[in-house]
Image 1 (spheres, rainbow, N blue to C red):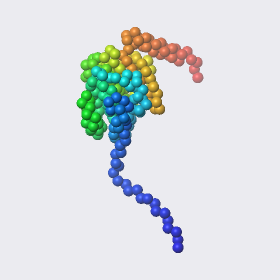
Image 2 (cartoon, rainbow, N blue to C red):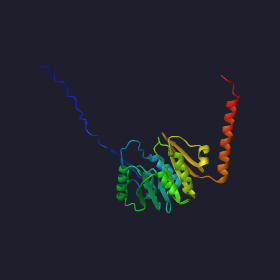
Image 3 (tube, rainbow, N blue to C red):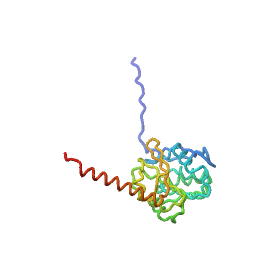
Image 4 (tube, helix red, strand yellow):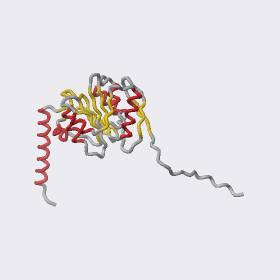
Length: 230
């Protein structure tokens, strides 16, 4: 009698099911609360370590602060700010599925200080009254071209003692930030993520950074012109 061949499992092809996973709020009123996150292409919840460091930078108590997350995605940053006492938090997102998830989380937490808004993040910042925001979170898709317009609009919208959080695949330099009216306060690299905490540059800081950038550009140009040909 011949031995039976092992059965090979058959995988049926059907419609793909959208999976979900969870993140947790690090501190504040809703500490350790788990939030569901849709598994969408390009969606990157800010890692726990980065969020913990960011809110150590900002301070644990955000009472009275007005915050906006202009590329909300999972809402991790905005809900974290609300958990730590922020007075008003606006979560701006364009994806309809993510909007629905953000609203479900808002209801789950009874987060009455959080407003979920469908729209364009850069436009939201441009429409904000100058100096009206205390914290702006900027974490656009890494393959987008939204960095400069978002940062320029944020620089105009933040209060004199306000902050801009920038999450990017590369580190932003003083020369890049100066024309936008911002200066680096803190920086962290965690894996593929560069986390920046920025503040408004003073007139002197902006002038110094622009001067340094111009000097560096002239030095590079001079070096290129005087180098011998191949």
